[in-house]
Image (cartoon, rainbow over all chains, first blue to last red):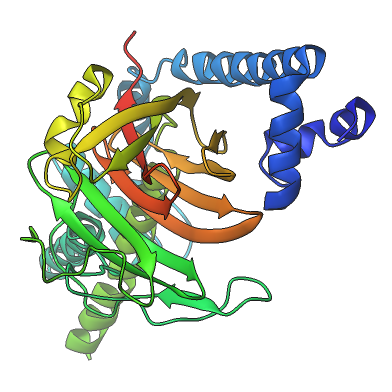
Length: 226
Length: 159
């Protein structure tokens, strides 16, 4: 790869968008050509500077007084009921707490802010909100490890590009989070793969061998850790 | 009639509460800060003949000692500081090339796309999620001199 070709593909190289063979050629050129390597370094530094600048601007935004200003605004506002024909300003509660005011505001939206019907509505709303929050919080927390290739699992095969190869998409979903999770893996044709975890070091070993299994590392001759 | 109205109100309120909750929580997930991480890649030549253990591989000793080799030598290392979208690549002995692209980097984990080429052919193409301070160890190919192992470790950038 020449310097001109490399510089024409510089952005795609830095973004990792080149095909693997071009990536390799570009990387080899960059490692051999000091001027192109300098270009890569300066582009990466520029990218890092931009990222840092944007992050700094975002983190500099002060939202600490946001809720207080909302509360102050709520205190100023009166609620308008939809029960009467014409909108009118009313005081819903003699000693309105923020929660009751909020409930009254929601009630006003659905037209159920009468003294008799508000409590069930408020309870229902709270229950619905709690359920929604619980669903949203619980499901990400119990993230599952989908594709796990167990210690004794050997890959079946599928293609990488034109050649036949292997694809591993494990079916069993585990409910606990693991230090290393394999979302998908493909290995070249004529290869098999075995993986296992070393919990002490939080390291997952990915053992790519030949399909003829003469490479000396089957499951039989090793005490595998799960 | 009033009961039906109450039930309808509860349903409507459920939507009123659930939608903002979903938006807020999804927003939190999306807006999770991109963190910078350090990827340390090492290529190791392992042989079954009795030999020495390269002292530079001491941090990997506990990983390597379970493997069926008797000697280990460090061939090459590569250290990259990455955040989401960055890549880290290195030439692997025995005409190989490893390309690691960080697809996501957060406070708790990294998501990586790993492509290992040998002889200009992809050997492994994997999408992985690594928690902080976790790592992977790949046994890639045998050469005349032994077997090439590739270690990838992640750690947060120390300020």
